[in-house]
Length: 530
View 1 (cartoon, rainbow, N blue to C red):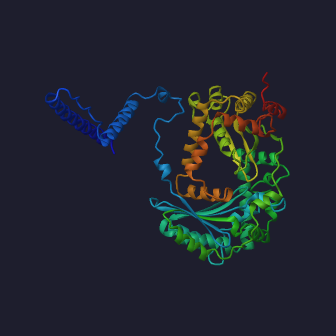
View 2: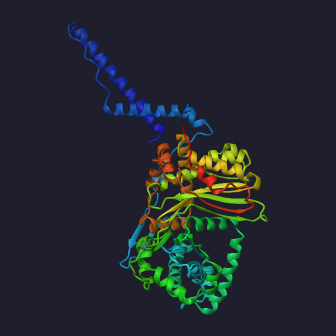
């Protein structure tokens, strides 16, 4: 019911009540003239409907008055409180349907009839951490070889089929997960699913193509080594999780790439590409029952080995070691470094507070400017004092551990001040946190999460990742409720658990002679308060 209708009903009810009161008053006056000794009857209450409409009208007027004269805190440019809140899109968010087949293969769909394209993906609980030192790089090598031809299609026929549909076929490999996905028009979902089933079950892995792809991967490795940020985080993992599976790189060492054979690829598929460790996802204008029937027909050759990735992780858990890696290279104009603490695994209750803490520390880039208007005090300090070219907080989660820290790029003569600024703001989370900063960070995190799942491909990726890590898709309403439950006391508690007097891992590359030593960083994980 609109505001205009409520006000109209209120006026009608008041007119009705007034006329009834006048009639009662007239009747009582006549009775008083006839019998002066009798007492005039009291006017009765208005009808219930009129009372309800009056209350509604008063509430509407109060809301209008609030809109005309809003609370001053909502007008402050740095206020974390939203001026308007509409949860209708969140409450009507499409639900995710999941079906588990007898083989253990999970099929998940999220229907969005408004979309004109659909994304079909196969997400596998396998990555570089499930390799050995001798086979490190096999998962990434397999990602390249999976598109090089099957018993049904040659690589050229596969490319032509995808291009004729106007689709996009891609894959990626991480330390714990591998994904193969296709984005196509809604009518081409069965064809895309057939291609994915074909490459995962019937790839030929010809020796000639393996040798050709070996050179491609070696060139890719050279390109990655030129991307300093990638090198920084590879070094960070290698030192933080040294002698642990998570310390291995995704591409693997060059020597392994030169020696990987067809048998290595086949063994990796038979061991890790099993039905219980796979999730097949479709997002877009798809029907769940039809998609499940198609999966049953297409994926018939998968192994039903019940061994899960969590069991393999339990055999070789990641062990965090406080340490550092420094590579001095004066040919690089800018110094880059990352300092990290041990973080939380995916299923840890403190994962959400760590995400809020990451949002509180924020990101900043010199090209963006506007440092003094940033909500993050770290971004303000770095930007106003021109201490860095860029900086960002990161929070990386794995099955049994994680990494939480800050990555920065700066000129060599700014490293000392920048390091002090970073460690001051990080350690300050343990004892000085305002409710306004937490509210602002929670709002930013919610916005970031919603933007992250804008589109069928991000939605499919989010479904696959959550089913592999949590075993279910967390509804947006539940996720927002968890974020909203974080307050200043929660941040302090979690910071004292993961940051206060804890070991750090440090990775640095470039002209880093002025970067403080490891003990300097370690001493600034706590504050001496008397």
